Length: 420
Image 1 (cartoon, helix red, strand yellow):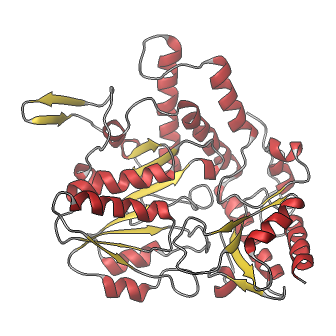
Image 2 (image 1 turned 60 degrees about the vertical axis):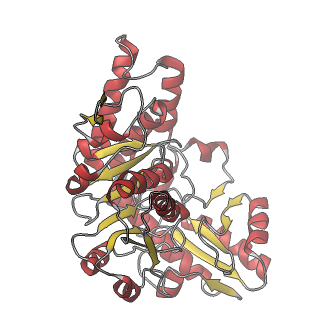
Image 3 (image 1 turned 90 degrees about the vertical axis):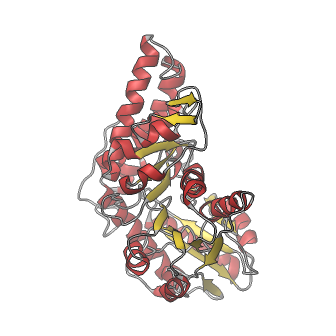
């Protein structure tokens, strides 16, 4: 493992983190010293410890896990379960309640299918926000169509985003009914960058309704505690928290564990075929839901990513992200013709999670991405995987702890030149 030094001589004023020392763990920045990477909400860059783990698997011990008795296979099986333990500890949950998936989209689909198909009945209602990421929205429409084919009509109700960027709690209250069974929501919004107030939502809907939480933009960015969050399912991806693509996690709370039914089965599934149908003998959520050959190197990389985050300290990462968010907002606010999306630019918050979205009246967001790309500044424009509803595209700057105030200054300088 590479040595990681954290000291009190901060590169960015209030962050607690020596950013230059932190950046040295990411080979992408030494290989591309002129790169300014502002698209971490799409995927993060990878530290050397993660790169080394992937290389080690493919060059030194490439085998399948849980399928054979020879040493490489049995050791990989052990390493996967050790990784599961690390991730469970990181989320403060029991190992038996954590499932490895192919990513957040896979997790959110598994959450909807494995719970919804077996528990929703004719006339039940699901609440969600269409301005959330489509991977948190569309799986429930899929469940609705699949149940409709069985003669069960499920209603999906839309609550809205408040003008400042978090959920409109009044719309949640107004839509709530005795038939509401599920609410899907984000923890940190992927475009607006705000904490979406899980505790207040739970207080409004009460204890019975099942809450499925998309934590793609919070796990690895801020403390996510499965015991403290009043939700029933938590979905997240590895590649947004320094791990390789192709791995994610799904936490399933103990209170709904006996209501979960698998939607995929394979050679290692603990299921017996009986005269009365399938009989399940799984003792954990991952035994019940995981099947087939897992993405072994990606899972191992997730364990190394957790090691890396814990070594740096989640509080130091969160502080750095918050400092950068506020600094970027303050630098942008005086640019002519700039229109902020909901989020810190509207609410004027004193903290953030590294995401600021905006557009200019005089230049399209997409044109700006091409101009910025020519300067080796990578940002994203478009609908950001949400329903457009006729709205203008926003340019999204999404940062992580390896970004600096100096990079923000360069971004703003280019934007000012391009829009003046």
